[in-house]
Length: 419
Image 1 (tube, helix red, strand yellow):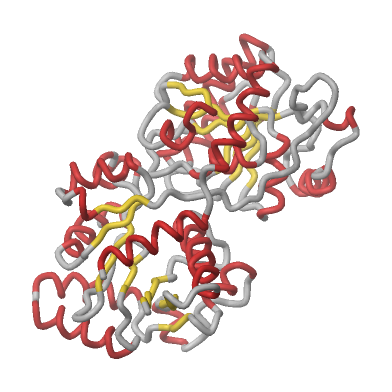
Image 2 (image 1 turned 60 degrees about the vertical axis):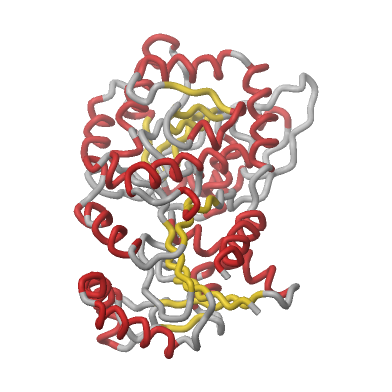
């Protein structure tokens, strides 16, 4: 039987990005394992240095994070991240340390067949095959868009590649980058696309056949998320009265929010749209220019930043948005556009990296460096109800092509390929 050990260290009490990928992947793999005797899935969790020194719980009880990190199949490795990282660096330069680290890992975790590092690194092993996730190469292609920590990823990745048997990535676009910029043979790179974490909502049916905008839904008597949005309005600057354009992701330079705000200003000035712009996501790094752009906008009172929200709140916002706009400069996959499509929001996104691969013919595309082009595509969508309805219908079909079960099945194929 295949036995895989998956690193779930990126899972946190408030997971996002890699953490959400790990949660959904492990859940789907464990579901397959429960109905099959061909594989066994266990997980590895490393404590932070402070937690390790204080000998306290690594993951406090907290919903989804606890369901993975607190399960009986999850083993805490008695080696904090800040100690293992320099050990990995030393293992690259010194074979004896590499062998010592591999021996310790193999003995500690009963010699799995596969060791799967989920966050740009994987420990060496004497007996197991090793797999490393590389989601994108922002730190190589666009170093101006990453912080100091992420800038160190290249050295870490290149060291780990010396003992990694297979690389898993999340799009054909990222695979091409890994082959080109890291010199990895294409046969050693396996693509396992992501999927939305949300289930599709029921399709609205009413006379006219046009999907209701957020301002229309109350007039047709169908508003299943109204209570959630009303509660959100009580605790945020957005009062829930205006229709809105939606952006969901971390507030950081790569997401190109400044261009989105410029496009919004043009739509207000040239087409007098009544919409608000909602920016949903926690502050990442170098986010100050975004808030300066908001402060300088003539329509600053119509632009609202909503910090980390619950899944139910984000789902409600997606489902009621007149448009989801995602003009990112570079993405390994662009999961938010798939989430928007799953929940019935029409999408305008950038024509770069993996975004056209994920969006297919179900989105409108614009040059991310051109606010006029972005504004034009948003206006096309707002001004043409039949186009909006077409994109909603295509979006549901596009999103249905992706599922976490398929991601897990592809991951298992990668595991079996190595054995």
